[in-house]
Length: 112
View 1 (cartoon, rainbow, N blue to C red):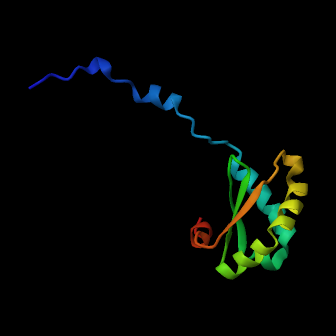
View 2 (tube, one colour):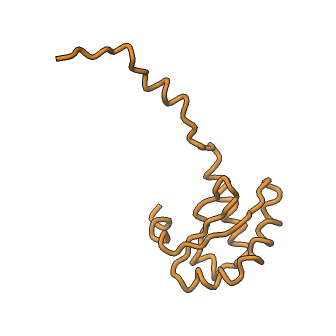
Protein backbone atom coordinates (compact mmCIF):
# COMPACT_ATOMS: atom_id res chain seq x y z
CA UNK A 1 0.00 0.00 0.00
CA UNK A 2 1.27 3.42 -0.99
CA UNK A 3 1.81 5.96 1.76
CA UNK A 4 -0.06 9.27 1.34
CA UNK A 5 2.19 12.30 1.16
CA UNK A 6 0.54 14.99 3.30
CA UNK A 7 2.79 17.75 2.03
CA UNK A 8 0.61 18.27 -1.08
CA UNK A 9 -2.48 19.17 0.94
CA UNK A 10 -3.55 22.74 1.48
CA UNK A 11 -5.22 23.99 4.60
CA UNK A 12 -8.94 24.52 4.23
CA UNK A 13 -8.49 27.96 5.78
CA UNK A 14 -6.14 28.96 2.93
CA UNK A 15 -8.55 27.70 0.28
CA UNK A 16 -11.52 29.55 1.77
CA UNK A 17 -9.58 32.83 1.70
CA UNK A 18 -9.30 32.54 -2.10
CA UNK A 19 -13.02 32.00 -2.70
CA UNK A 20 -15.14 35.02 -3.57
CA UNK A 21 -18.56 34.49 -2.00
CA UNK A 22 -20.04 37.77 -3.31
CA UNK A 23 -21.49 38.34 0.13
CA UNK A 24 -22.21 41.88 1.18
CA UNK A 25 -22.93 42.39 4.88
CA UNK A 26 -25.63 44.90 4.07
CA UNK A 27 -27.28 42.78 1.36
CA UNK A 28 -30.33 42.06 3.52
CA UNK A 29 -30.79 45.77 4.25
CA UNK A 30 -30.35 46.61 0.58
CA UNK A 31 -33.04 44.10 -0.44
CA UNK A 32 -35.35 45.45 2.25
CA UNK A 33 -34.92 48.97 0.88
CA UNK A 34 -35.54 47.80 -2.69
CA UNK A 35 -38.63 45.95 -1.46
CA UNK A 36 -39.88 49.16 0.19
CA UNK A 37 -39.53 50.93 -3.17
CA UNK A 38 -41.31 48.02 -4.86
CA UNK A 39 -44.24 48.35 -2.45
CA UNK A 40 -44.43 52.09 -3.14
CA UNK A 41 -44.33 51.45 -6.89
CA UNK A 42 -47.02 48.78 -7.18
CA UNK A 43 -49.22 49.84 -4.26
CA UNK A 44 -50.52 47.95 -1.26
CA UNK A 45 -52.88 45.60 -3.14
CA UNK A 46 -50.23 44.17 -5.47
CA UNK A 47 -47.42 44.28 -2.90
CA UNK A 48 -49.35 41.75 -0.78
CA UNK A 49 -48.82 39.28 -3.62
CA UNK A 50 -45.36 40.23 -4.89
CA UNK A 51 -42.03 40.67 -3.11
CA UNK A 52 -38.42 41.35 -3.99
CA UNK A 53 -36.56 38.05 -4.08
CA UNK A 54 -33.12 39.19 -5.18
CA UNK A 55 -30.97 41.59 -7.09
CA UNK A 56 -28.23 40.05 -9.23
CA UNK A 57 -24.76 41.39 -9.94
CA UNK A 58 -25.84 42.01 -13.55
CA UNK A 59 -28.59 44.37 -12.29
CA UNK A 60 -31.59 42.11 -12.74
CA UNK A 61 -34.33 42.31 -10.13
CA UNK A 62 -36.24 39.14 -9.33
CA UNK A 63 -39.77 39.51 -7.99
CA UNK A 64 -41.67 36.51 -6.62
CA UNK A 65 -45.41 36.52 -7.14
CA UNK A 66 -48.22 34.60 -5.46
CA UNK A 67 -49.39 33.12 -8.76
CA UNK A 68 -48.89 33.22 -12.51
CA UNK A 69 -51.77 35.66 -13.04
CA UNK A 70 -50.03 38.36 -10.98
CA UNK A 71 -46.69 37.59 -12.64
CA UNK A 72 -48.27 38.05 -16.09
CA UNK A 73 -50.01 41.29 -15.13
CA UNK A 74 -46.72 42.70 -13.85
CA UNK A 75 -44.90 41.45 -16.95
CA UNK A 76 -47.22 43.52 -19.16
CA UNK A 77 -46.12 46.63 -17.26
CA UNK A 78 -42.46 45.68 -16.90
CA UNK A 79 -40.95 48.63 -18.81
CA UNK A 80 -42.92 51.16 -16.78
CA UNK A 81 -42.04 49.36 -13.53
CA UNK A 82 -38.33 49.42 -14.43
CA UNK A 83 -38.54 53.14 -15.18
CA UNK A 84 -40.26 53.97 -11.87
CA UNK A 85 -37.99 51.68 -9.83
CA UNK A 86 -34.86 53.20 -11.38
CA UNK A 87 -35.98 56.66 -10.28
CA UNK A 88 -36.42 55.36 -6.73
CA UNK A 89 -33.21 53.31 -6.55
CA UNK A 90 -31.02 55.98 -8.12
CA UNK A 91 -30.02 57.24 -4.65
CA UNK A 92 -28.76 53.70 -3.85
CA UNK A 93 -26.54 53.65 -6.94
CA UNK A 94 -28.69 50.94 -8.52
CA UNK A 95 -29.87 50.89 -12.12
CA UNK A 96 -32.20 47.99 -12.86
CA UNK A 97 -31.76 46.47 -16.33
CA UNK A 98 -34.52 43.89 -16.18
CA UNK A 99 -37.17 42.49 -13.86
CA UNK A 100 -37.92 38.79 -13.80
CA UNK A 101 -41.18 37.57 -12.29
CA UNK A 102 -41.22 34.13 -10.67
CA UNK A 103 -44.32 32.64 -9.10
CA UNK A 104 -42.69 29.26 -8.37
CA UNK A 105 -40.52 30.66 -5.56
CA UNK A 106 -43.39 32.38 -3.71
CA UNK A 107 -43.66 29.70 -0.99
CA UNK A 108 -39.90 29.72 -0.46
CA UNK A 109 -39.87 33.52 0.06
CA UNK A 110 -42.86 33.49 2.42
CA UNK A 111 -41.37 30.76 4.59
CA UNK A 112 -38.28 32.84 5.42
